[in-house]
Image (cartoon, rainbow, N blue to C red):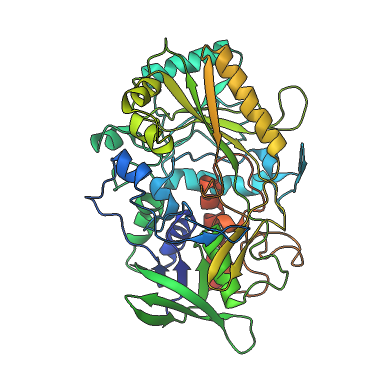
Length: 494
């Protein structure tokens, strides 16, 4: 490995892998440093007990909560980052999400640019991640230049029945845009993909798409088991001149022209805080956002759910308003199928036959509401520990959303609907800790994802997002990374 590559990318998740894919055609020498390793082909990737009960793919890392109590976060450190186990919903933020939006308990601020600025990069991201879906079934869908690259993943018969029942109940289910080749996926095992780690068998994630595209170029190198510990600047404190990392018990360093930090919303902020960089605004680590999210199970003893993958539609009837002229509530989408072993992993006293009966007569949903940015909701370093001080916001809206979908499911013939709110251990789309903005006094990054303080340091992962919206952020992260790659490319040729 050359010790002086032109670009170092820290992290191989959605931000880092996509950024590298965007930069690879420049011919610049690029080194991607990933703290994890590749999930092997023989991993227990389709075993719900190993995944959901024994947490086979989680690290042994612990953080502190606001009260200083230790907990095990649900973050993953592998080649491909958290996308290895994500639900592959590759949905755009709505156009209205880029403008100021009034919520029941506060204001979600405007982005420093409109949806139209990011739309061409969404197009490129959808092509890179081979998104399957349509652009017409959701009334809130923003304008597209054309159709999605691939047709929708079809509903299984049981799911088509639920969609029809919901339409009859008065809502408008739309087809989720998905990064999945369903035929290839099912050849690897008869499971859903939501929460199951992909071993390069049909899920379009950061490894199988972004990283694969980058590594097809000889000028790009991936170094695994390489944990970056520090970034150093030159004597003037401006340009980042050295990236220090540990690998196999040894300390190494690289001296690139450009550094792109893409370690995730928590770890990117932690590395900047540990290095004392990019924080003259005192914004690094602040405005941590994690969607208010609840899982729901809607049960009907007359309904038979024999589906395998399930996660094919969502509901945005209450996304832009509560449906009655009030403030927005959020997004509903199907979860991956909650099979008996997953149900028992979450409700440990439940006998297996009972879990099987419930699972066989239920449909599983996921409710998402926006978490409004709050400077006091933050990531801090407490000695050598990461401390998460998450101040939930907008819970009035989330509670209304859960109540609205429960009432709708009952109207659709599901008499029993149960819900569970996810807590801080669940990384429900973490973002916002190193946000873009138009004012260097109130943001850490400029609108191009360049740190205000250091002209050759970029942050191009979910940390850069100024708002969480109420949909899955992966495609927006990819679009932002491709846009940042274009800025870096222009820097290299200037």
